[in-house]
View 1 (cartoon, helix red, strand yellow):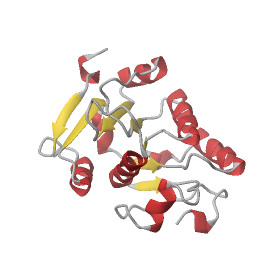
View 2: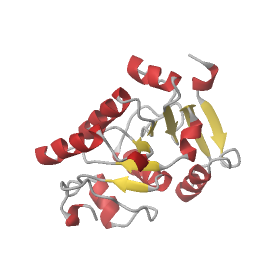
View 3: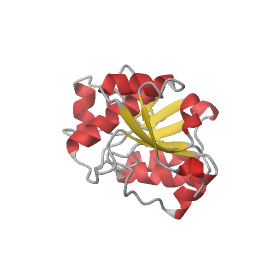
Length: 196
């Protein structure tokens, strides 16, 4: 593993070269972040991707088709890559060598990086970033909600193909618990009321 892929700890002052990161840290009240990989990915266009754990098959198929060839101006995809559909999208993106920013809802301390992710990281197309200290090993509802707010704050726009009723994602949307980030639908797959 190269020196550039070791975990770095940055505080709010050190985040200045990445304005979106600094503003997201301020909005969440976070004074320290842990990063591993290519931090320069934060300087380009960022598209957030969030989806509930359970979603209809039609949404899964449409999202899969969409991410096989996303628009040219799509930029780097930012997500927690935690739900099954988010994991599938990550697999598609890594196979296409598309840049990703992975925001796990846990610390990076004991996190294992699989060979495909490590190869992409070594190629400079992955950044893993967390606001949770290295000893935080378990994901829970509060951590997932904080991570989703961070993804929304970091992104120029969001894609949310499905937010299941009563889910962390649906509650955050209904409470307007995020920074004002435009939510864009996946063409011909999402009814207008689902994208709001």
